[in-house]
Image 1: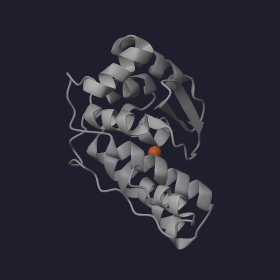
Image 2 (image 1 turned 135 degrees about the vertical axis):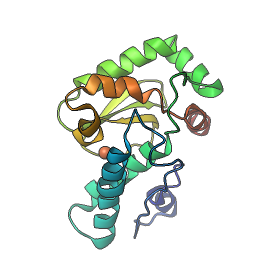
Image 3 (image 1 turned 45 degrees about the vertical axis):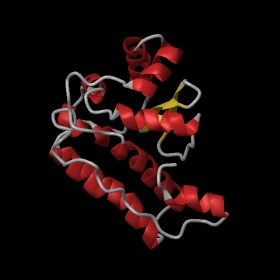
Length: 186
Ligand SMILES: [Fe+2]
């Protein structure tokens, strides 16, 4: 599904032996101003890499590290170069309109749920059209669109303004990829 080793391994009935970090499908400064190059260097280059490296070295909690790698794999894959006019397309647009009436209503619901998360966690659009949250890290197989609400994802660029971070996410979502997840999961 997400080209993730665990998924393949689950199908084969064996535990994963090693993880690989997903290469970024865009340049490190492409997400600016939604996400700065400095945050990519820290978030992708150090934190996400850390989950992969620790899992592979057998350091710390294997389930926690694997889930951290899994979620960041989904996250960094789904972005594209920042654009103010970015909107859902084709399949993703139909999916959102079906479950939320309009993109604007979806954004309001999604951001409302994300703002309420206390401490570290994630918010995502699920395959059944609902908006769900994850505390810390957890592997979920029904993720279509995912936003990282851990402080490390936004504090460097937005200080305390989590609301602005969330609003700026919509400029960098690769809606064609989201549509391909909808198509694959439904
Ligand atoms: Fe993160």
